[in-house]
Amino acid sequence: TSNDERTAALADFLHTYNHHRCHTALGGQPPISRVNNPAGQYS
Image 1: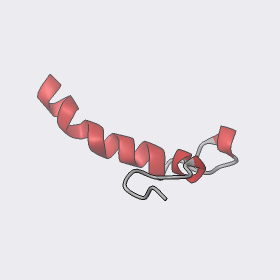
Image 2: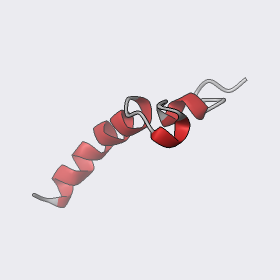
Image 3: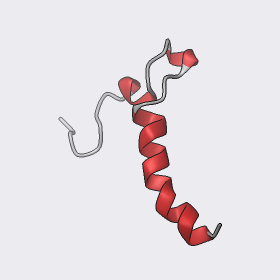
């Protein structure tokens, strides 16, 4: 009900959206499956 609550919920939402939600445009895979070098794992 407030901007502070939205801000607090954003990180969890983004994780779920990018790591767990299946996307039809990606053949049912989550967006993270398309990332070659995730943050902190550069080679």
